[in-house]
Structure formats: structure tokens, C-alpha cells
Length: 434
Image (cartoon, rainbow, N blue to C red):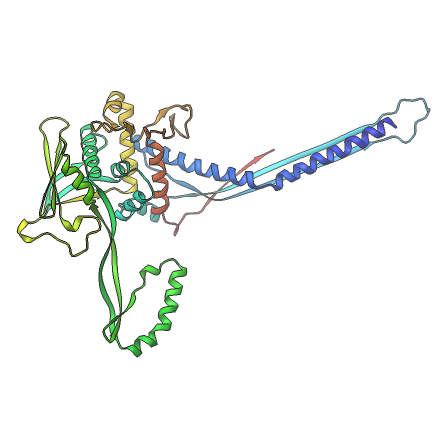
């Protein structure tokens, strides 16, 4: 009777373990979160790896998860041998209990090699001012964003007559460009959307013709709204007794905040003085890295103030204004730019620590635009191996390292500039653990 009681106590325990194991498999939340974390980490590590490849002047390579399928199974059994009687009666009785449990987990990943023409065409397309405005609006650091995205400032009067380059491989160009960007941001540099003049689309219509068109117009509006492109439709407007479809083109442009210009004009610095004449602000910027001082004048007309109407302009007596244009990089060029920074860090650590740590002169909290650490640095959030292992640390509370912000920006640009129209055949990788 003792062995029978033991058997009765053990069997439910084993069955309970097997049932609880099956219940754990049915709980998909931890596995879903794990897949999400691993996909995010893989993409960030891929971005870091491509920056390292750019530092070694190697071609970029991108892959992307498309689907992840996980399967798990847990089986078990209990086998027991209990003798009914023994002869002779005083012989030893043997009871055998043989519980068994086995589990299998399999993960199947579908990976796409992003080497199609559309994807690389997106990588080689320059960024737009609309992108810069959007990134600034969602909280990216303005100085970091402009250093990453802008390759040069060009002053034009028919032809290029002056240029301030942002070349990461030359410490004086790198430092000088940051000085210019820092002063411009302090002076109120911003981006805004500007509504263009309305233009008629199609002929003028009578009230009866417009009424006949109205059902089709409402249907098209509902279809466009469902597809998220309602802003592309023309607007039906009345002009006197007639009606016409009109459309106005919106654009993003560089502008300056008047309050910041006025504040800087009241307290000039060694690097920047601002004068104002009939609504036209002139920024006198002094830049000196080595050698003689360079003086760059930038004029801001009333039409280039943020919020100014489209028709605002300066009088003709002031003469033509000199324009400064932002030359924007492509995503591929951003990888090359960051690769040059990493290359300087490897080849000349002293110059990197002293010059590539920004800002240099304005008394603000110094920070690195991008920095990698040898090996698996304590607290590293991303890592990649290319000959040796390199890692990236998270941004500190004082934003002394912008590296993770840069990788976050490249993650957004990866999605914005890629295309999913013509991918090659997918690769399937199966991983089975027992």
C-alpha cells in the first residue's frame, strides 16, 4: 500500500508539470517581445556594421527581417510497472515509475537581402528639407541633424562664389562647419511649410456644371482620404458666379525666427554680429580655425523670416541679396561621413578627442557626434564585429554622446528611403533548439 500511495502522489505532480509546460508554450507574449527586441537590435547592429564598413572603405550591405515563425511543442508520458502478485509471497516486490518529457522549439526567419535597384536608388537620393523639418519637429537635436545631413553651404550669384564644406576627414573643415551651424541655429535657423499660390486646374464651370461634378468629386475625396492622400486633390472654389478646381503646392523652406535675430542683434559676440536695415538682417559671421579670419555675410530678407507671407520682399533699392544654399547628403553619403569620423578616431585619437568633441568655443556641454568603443564596452547598447568588435554606448543624461541618436536617425531614413517593389528571392534560415 505504501508504494501505491507514492505512485498516486507522484503521477499527478508529473502530469501537472507537463500541463504547466504546455501552458507556458501557449503564452506567446514573451516570445513576441523577444522577436521585437531582437529585430530592433539586429537592425541597429547592421547600421553600426555599415558605418564600420564605410570606415574601412568597404561596400555597404543591408538585410532585413520580413517574417518570423516560431513553433514549440512539449510532450510527455508516465509509464509504471506494478506486479499484482509474487510467488513465493515473501519475495521482494519491485515497482517501476518512468516519467518522460521532451520539448522542441523551432524558429524560422525569412530574410531579404536589400540589394535591389529601388533600395539603392533611395539610399543615393539626397534628403529633402521636408525631412529635416520633420526630424526637427519630433525632437532630434538641430545641430546634430544639420551636421549629419548637410554636406556644405554654398553662396551663389549665378555661379558658386563661396563654399563652407563639411568634410569629416579634415578636422579644420569639420570644426569650421560646426561653428557656422551652431551660430545659425542660435540665430533662429528653422524650417517651415509654405503654401504656394493657388493655380486653376481645368476650365471655369457654371453652377450647374459644378453641381453635376460634385458627386464624382466627393467620391474621389473619400477614396483619397482612405488612402491617406487627400492633400493631393484640388479644391473646388467659387470665383464670382463661376467655379473652378484649384490646387496650391506646399513646399518646405529654410527660414529664421525674428525674435532670435533681434535678441542676437542686441548682444553681439566675437563670432557673430547682426545689423538690420529696413527689415533686412545681415549676419556678419567670423570663422577662424587656423590662419586668417574668414568673414561670411548672410542676408535675411523679410520673405525669409518664419511666418512671412509669400509676397513679402525687400525693396529693389537694397540690391540683390546673396543666397546661401544647403547642399543635403544622401543616406549613402551619411554612412560615408560617419565612416570618416570613425577613421579619424582610429588613426589619430588625440585629434579626435580634442577637435571632434563639440562644441569647442561656446561654453556648452561638449559632446561627440559619433564615437565607437573597442570591444564590448560596459553598458553598450549596440555592437558589431568587423575584424575586431566595436560597440556604442547610450547617450548620457547630459547628451555627451550623440551616437545612439545618429543610429536612430539612420533607422528612420532606412525606412523612408527604401523601396519594397522589386526584391530578390528571399533566404530562409531555420534555427532548431532542443
